Length: 284
Image 1 (cartoon, rainbow, N blue to C red):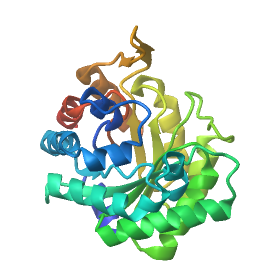
Image 2: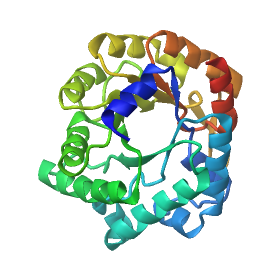
Image 3: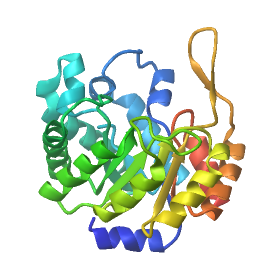
């Protein structure tokens, strides 16, 4: 997919992403504390069923589960030599699952380590993005990013190895502040200047708490705005599991408010399911 084709896709109307992956796979039996990328690679059936359901629910873009399959994060599990195998394998699983029903985004995310030098981030993201591009993804997404520096590294890495569109979403507090310092408003302006094709937020909170954030992002950039929030704020049950408060219909109604506020590309994060995407598509 070219950057121009991405612009044309958004120009046609609201673009629908998928919903949560991790929270649904945990329901399907993925243990806590494992490397999710390795678990999915070895146990693909739950992901295949989930992604087929998202495609049927109306997702235009589905994220390959390559989330933390970079060298830095995989080293936490002793899997740093599996970068190529995992990224290629996970992209193939997703492409086989959805066929030509939707676009497939290569997914990269934060290392979660604020102290890492920019050069090390750039090297890790360049390696991962080169593999994702070779594996045939249609576009890239940097999601659940905690600060603007790491997203800049993703954009620099992408520009060095491919011409794919890059969507960028950060996780924010309800006031727009970022976990690694600064705020989303200055961040999205910087990312637009660096060549991001769409910017916005994911995870964070429920859609009902993000209206002013979305309105203010819309005022700061000319490129498409992405919103992929959680199904409300979670409560922790007696087994230590996160239980999300918002149902599919309420989620979709709140997402309609965010679309009216300027969101162009929408989906769900933690706690959302194919039912949420179906309700969101219906609302559109």
